[in-house]
Length: 218
Picture 1 (cartoon, helix red, strand yellow):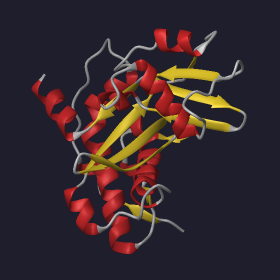
Picture 2 (picture 1 turned 45 degrees about the horizontal axis):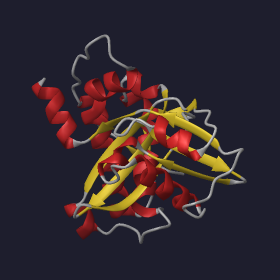
Picture 3 (picture 1 turned 90 degrees about the vertical axis):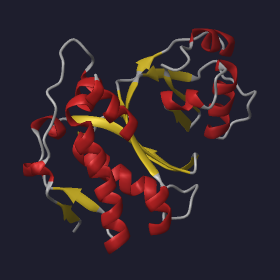
């Protein structure tokens, strides 16, 4: 049985503005709480060696709705772990807690996070929007249709799949390189292309300490 993460009921939330997408509303209203939950999940596992779950009755109603999130851990400006859900399939609060644990301890690209590393690490959350099919005739068509800084992208073909969050644009500015790196992430050659490649794109809302401060200042 998973241990429980408790004590979230005392967190105050900001009243969100209307007229913006639901992920932005969630980030404004509950971003600080979600970030606290992600960090609490990691600290809990560092202390006990166990995964934690959410005590649902202590959460705001909005965090009980289904949602998809990626949790990213950076250390000294470099990726240290990133795990998430491509599609919404469980309450967003639960999704953040579980993916924070996985990003810290179950990302196959890295050794489990240590306490010393965590003390210097930065944790952020990306709330994913729905994936929209992106019909393309060729790789050139895909590259020309991408919106740098805005589009998240998934590619799938022949049993392989890979995803880049919109945040990846911060380190890869050129659409052509963005696509090539994503193909390599999936295990294909950078030059690989298939006429039946499944392409979808999505938006996301990033939650970090910097974004929380910007919401508070707005």
